[in-house]
Structures are given as C-alpha cells and as structure tokens.
Length: 405
Image 1 (cartoon, rainbow, N blue to C red):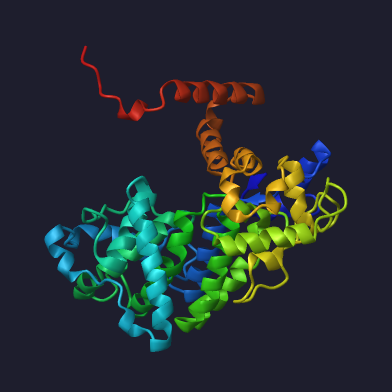
Image 2 (cartoon, rainbow, N blue to C red):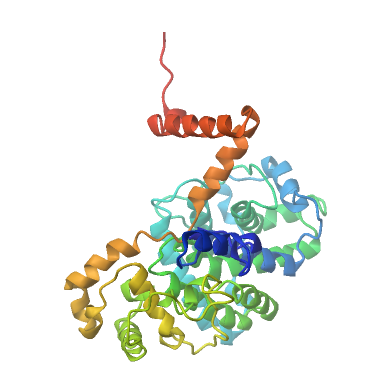
C-alpha cells in the first residue's frame, strides 16, 4: 500500500490502510509516500522558523515576490549580484559537515538536473546555482513565479531559494516590498537547510531499495545539523520521528539491494537477518499496533551511531514471504550477490513496490476536474474512464503542432 501519511490513512484502528487489509483478509506492506513525508518535514521546519504567521491559504511573502519579480534583474549578466551560499557564517566545527553535505548535493543535483523536468528540474538547478554558481553546463534561467499556495511545497522551495539569490536586489527596494528585515535571515536559514540536507534526499526519494539507507543518513544529518542550527535540527528530528516508515523491521531488508549501501553494511545486515530467522516462514508480522493489520511500529530511538543492522527484527523476514524472495543468497559473499540468480530474481519483485503515490494524486486531480460534469455515480465513473482512455490515446496532446486546414 502506497499512501499519504495522514491519520485517515494510517490510523491503526479503523483507518483506510487497516480497512483494506481487513477486507482482503491479509497483511500488506505499508509504504508511506516519500514525497508526502518530505512535505511534512518541511512544513514543520518552515512553521518553526515563523517566516510567515498568516493563516491565509496564500503566502504573503511569495505573493509579494511574484508581484515584484519583473523588477528584478534576472538576465545572465546580473548573476554577479546573486547572494549564493556562504559558509563563513558557520562555526569552524561545522565546516567538515557543511563541506560533506555540499559536495554530496552538488554531485546528485548535477546528475539529476539532466533528466528531471518542470519544478523538479528547476529545483535541482537552483540548488546548483545557490551552492556552486552553476547549473550543469548552462546557467539557470530564472522562471517567473506561477501558482502560489501553502499546499504547493515544491513552489515554496523554489521561491525561497530565488528570494535568497536575489537578496541584494531585494534589499534595494523599499522596506517590506518583498521581505521584512526579520524574514531575510529566516528565509536564508530555511534555504541553507533545504539545499544542504534535504535536497539530496528529495531528489532520490523515489527509489524504494535506497529508502532505508537514505532515511537513516537523513536522520543522522538532522542530528548533525545541530552544529548549524539547533532549533531546525530539533524540529526536523521531531517531525521525522513520526514518519520512519522505511526504518521499520519490515522494510529495512530492502537495503540489501541498494548499491549505495557499503558492502560491509550489507554483510552485517545479512548476518543479522540470518541470526534472527524464525524457525518457520513468517506469514504475518508479529510486532504491529492493535490487530495484525495495524500500523508497523517505528524504532523507539535512533542515534548518531544507529546502523541498519540495529533495526532488524524477526518481522524483517515478512518481506521475504510476501514478495516471494529467495533468501539463499544471504549465505554468499556480498561480492557474489550481483551474479546470484536468487538476488537478481528478487529485484523484479522489489521494483513492484511504490515509494511515492503520485499516481493517486493525479487520480484525485482527475476526479475533482470532472466531478461537476457527472449527474450520478455511474455517469461519474463513465466520465473518468472515457477521459483516462483518451489521455492514453493522445498522451502528448498539448505538445502537438496545430494542423492547417
């Protein structure tokens, strides 16, 4: 099950995930949408900084930025006045951590910007410009801000970075034209956190086999971020602690197939799995809330020294049963796994898991667009099927060139 982590989905008594399992009469893996998890973390960090205290659906800061965007010099010759990342504001003790994060983000963003599109591509390019000054082979084109709403978190990331980059020009405007004096520092604190720590996780969050490793590394980064900003660190840790979906005992074994995990860690993970292997095949997880169909239990505590091996439990064998994975490769050397038939065959089943539920989000948008066009439930379902069929038939309709009569 891939789902947004709202209480209506994940409550362990009568919520949607429990109801689906009860109707099917079997346990399922719980796969929280990593896009939604990331948005929740950012929401808490943004709100803790009190950049915008208004309860309006629109963000006043971003609305003012959009209104005055044309007054900014966004052409390439004006890039000399961009206010890029400045590591001199951090303590010397934090420099090694900052340099490590910055190098990691530049490596990932450089490769991601070449095949990402739309908002995701712009976000990767802006991270490159802010941290290094370049966006791959070409300088970034600063696009005019579009729709703004508190629910559009990718917009918040993009506009916050742009506000930081144009900080010098914005300072030339009359006070509060775009930012107040207090907002300048807070926005930069937010952008530093987003670009240094959050961005690399977001750009790779769609990979389910990398999810346990990436989440553990992100949690460790949140703890280390205390060197830069203790308040942001505490807020991020507190928010992430409620969304450790891929660090449960049931999901940790996915890291066995991740190329990002060092061989020593994968060997330790395999040894631990063999040590806790139950006498019989595990047909149902044993450590969940409420009934057997309840929510998996998150790790009680994660520290800077926690490893994936520490998170393994007897329920870790459940994923082998439900995905029909042959575990005989665990007894082999890690160097031999890539040529193991059992290991390679398992990848096909694992890749069937979804780490994000963007498809469901598009379905909700489709439903809302055509709900008013239907007269009854039956008619509503017919309309959705016709629209979906037409979109499959003409997937690039917007890009088609008009034909002359």
